[in-house]
Image 1 (cartoon, helix red, strand yellow):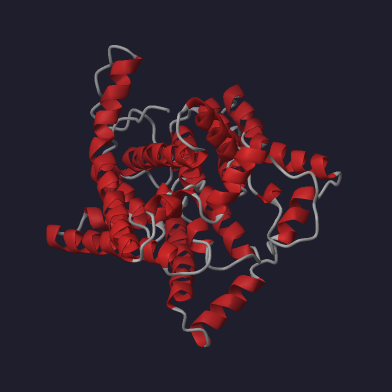
Image 2 (cartoon, rainbow, N blue to C red):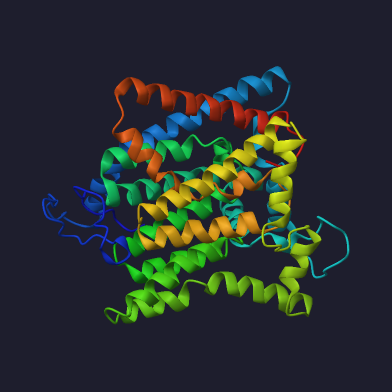
Length: 405
């Protein structure tokens, strides 16, 4: 992964192009050159160690609560994490591949699921002695730490180590944070997205292009990462030509376009992928269904779980507006803006939408900065509440709520 940069002493200047910081910010204490790539990696890993340890602690608290609750309900933890809902679809693709037909059955066509994660599950399963389900969990947990490191790297580059650690903890303690250690694609996607955004911020355009392309092979929302990389690269060309930025702009959407195009070719129709999505009740409607469900939840439906999802959508939108007001770096605004546009504008199932926003960690930057200036007592109370709340919500989500998390 791209190395993290030295710690800036302040937030990006409000009048800087795209909010990008140069490596020679006045007052920045530059590290001595490392003896080699391995030494450099160790140095940067050491810098991120507090964030990674805090991330592990938050997720282990959630896992402990889940284990105790599952034991009381006579459920096994591993099947819950590795083989239910979307995880089962990915395991099916890893074992048997994709279907050749569109069909007419709703919620039954596996072409809706992007290919990189099941491909990795199959590859790791072939190289390790465990089952495919175990391989999937291994990939997810490793990817979650790479994602946490990427979240820290972005936060550290923009606002220093304290805010970056808090940003990582907040991402770990989201109410749907348990999904980060399930057989889902959110952790892998967040890893690609975070490091792609970091690569753009640090002017590593080829890294950004490749990571964006890989994110586009992981989830449908990979187009949000591609938009952030491509638009930022093309706008940057107005001020200074860069062949690497031009290559990144072309490469970033390649993964998403390749899979969507392949599905169309496989089904023999140009709109094959979108036809599959319609069979999953997931069509673009400009947000009409989202507004209908929000109104229903707030006025007539008192289901606590759906109320939490509604609050998540509203708060995420408000945080994005705040990020725009604060003039956060352009690639972060583009990524979270397109991600929100996709999640809010689609007419699909309602409950998993909080999970769909889990990769949008830049939305948490205003909260992390606020907490970085808070007193120790307030910080302890806020983070403790967030961690315990996430642990409860995660266990409830997979043990009580009857639908997919």
